[in-house]
Image 1 (cartoon, one colour):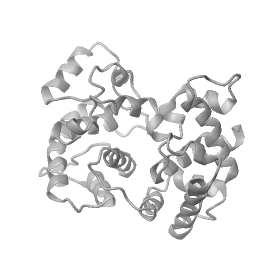
Image 2 (tube, rainbow, N blue to C red):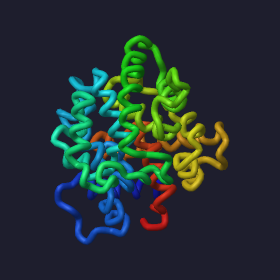
Image 3 (cartoon, rainbow, N blue to C red):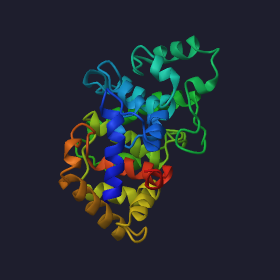
Length: 278
C-alpha cells in the first residue's frame, strides 16, 4: 500500500505544482503525455478540467437541464480526450440540438478522430459522433427520470444508462456499457445530479465492472482474489489507509480524494505498470 501511495505522491508533484520538478521521473513523464489516459486523479485530467469550467456542461446552470444532460452524454460518449473538446468555446456545452449540428458542420473537413477518439476506453464499440442523435432523445428521458425519482440510487442510475431501451427496443445510449455508464454517473455525482454512493456501493461496483479496479487491488495485495468479499475488503482497507495516512493528507483535498478517485487510480495502476516504473 505504501508503494501505491508513493506513486500517487510522485504524480501529484507534477499535477499540482506549477513549477515542475527537474528532472522528471519516468512515471511523471508518462502521466504528462496524456493526463486523460494516465493521470490517477480523475478530476485533474485535461478533459474533465475543460468540461467542468464555469460555462461547461457540468456547471449548475447547465447540468440541471436536458441540454446539460445531453452535453454530458456527448462529453463522456463522444468528445472525451479530443481536440474538439479543448477547442470548443463553451467547453462542450451545447444549448440545443441545432448547436450540436452547427458544431459538427463547422468541423466537417476534420478527420473524425478530431471529435471522437474511438479507442478512448479500449476497443471501439461503435463510438461515433453519429450517436449524438440517440443521446439527444435519451437525455430528455434521463433528465425527467432524475427529477421524477429523487430517491434513485447511484447504482440504479448506472444500471439504467447501461440497459435502457426506447420504444423501438433499441438502446437509448449507444456505446454506454456498464463502464461508461459508471463514469458518466460519477460525472453526475460531482455535478449534484446523482447521489454520492457509500464506500461499499463503490466497492460492489468495482466487483461488477471486473476491470482495472479489481486487478489493481489484487496487484497491490489487499485482495487475494476477485471475489465480491475480497474486493470489498481490499478497497475499504486501502481507502482507510490513504484517508488516514499523514503523508497523503498533504494532497487529499487538492486531488479530490474520495472512493471514485481511488477506483480511478487503481485502474491506472493496474494497466500502466506504475509499481514497476516507480
